[in-house]
Amino acid sequence: MNLSRTKLIIRIVIGALILGAVGFFMYLNLKPSTPTLSPTGQPGVSGGAAPGIAGAPAGAPAAPTPQNPAPESFPVTANPSQRLTRLTDFAVVAPSLNKSGDKIVFYKKDGGDLYAADFDGKNQSKISNITIVGLLDALWSPARDRAAVSYLDGTTIKSFLHIGTSSVAVLPTNITSIAWSPDGKSLAYTHANGQLLELIISDSAAKNPRTLFRTPVRDARISWPASDRITFATPASGIAEGYVFSYTRSTGAFEKIFGPAYGLAALWSPYDTRIVASYTPRGGERLLTRTLNPFDQERKDSRELPIQTFSEKCVFAGKQELWCAVPRTLTSIKPLPDLYLSGEFNSSDRIVAIDLIKNTTEELFNENDFDMSALIAAPEKNYLFFVSRRDGTLWSLKLK
Image 1 (cartoon, rainbow, N blue to C red):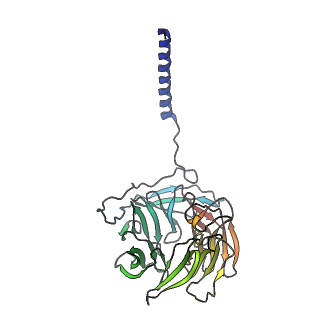
Image 2 (tube, rainbow, N blue to C red; image 1 turned 45 degrees about the vertical axis):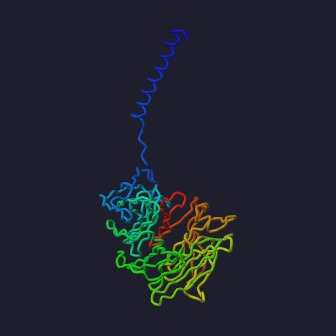
Image 3 (tube, rainbow, N blue to C red; image 1 turned 180 degrees about the vertical axis):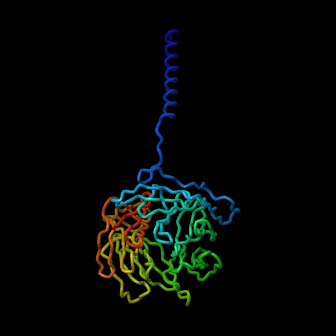
């Protein structure tokens, strides 16, 4: 290679480096900012709590450190004619109405911050920071003034009560299920002890716990539908028979009240001791949905509903009214509910209202492509809230 050609190559390389540096400088200084967008296109804000739980001794159940932030408001420009509004651009856990019933509250799954929002999404505010990672679930008291929160710390499930917006009370580790009494004044929870499942009851502040009962049904999850009765439901599977058992506190009796039924899952009404149950034939080839009072052995009010859906996709909007997200098709999906519960199958739902006296249905919404869960009916029945199972976001549907 001659000298002149070598100089030419060097000049080309140097020129390219200079042009690259100038271009990079202009990119850094002249590019437009790209904020995270809220559902309506305004800048969104994520939670401010740092991940992790600090200050707990080794092996001890650690409560998250509550922080009372200065109230942060996130105004949303809502379209008055808009019927469907996405309230969050992040995954949420345990949405619920607030104590006064005029706002929707929810935890941010990533970080544990607690938010409140208007029904139409016009305003959102962060009302509490909780430094926590691995948030699994939260169960609100019927009084809606506190929640029992569960999270994963390594391989250990830990739980605590989040009282108001700033107080916490630690619960034992490795709780397997939690239930509130109908009046919200007591808390029940279970954990495995050897080959037995223990039932413990405390007051609403997690004080004065006492073990009431032990059962060999180790994988059951509890509900508390009546003051004197706590129920135990086995996991739902289309390839295994399921049961619901009842423990009567006053007598100590433990008895089967529903089952066997394949794929059995039940949701209790907050108005009486009625359930909406979903179950399948053996093998989980199709889905049946029914309402009944499982404490009534004669099953006088047992009624098969004119829909096919999973019980967890329903909410009692009144004593005699049920709203459900109903999959548009379940053809060739089996076993049910296994594929749905594992997340291998996402349904595409419409929403119907069922009159439980007439056993008739009315379509409330049949648009878009949502797999809906965690339905909540507003007190005036003018809004319905749901979580999209595909991405965990929270949505508001204006009904009238």
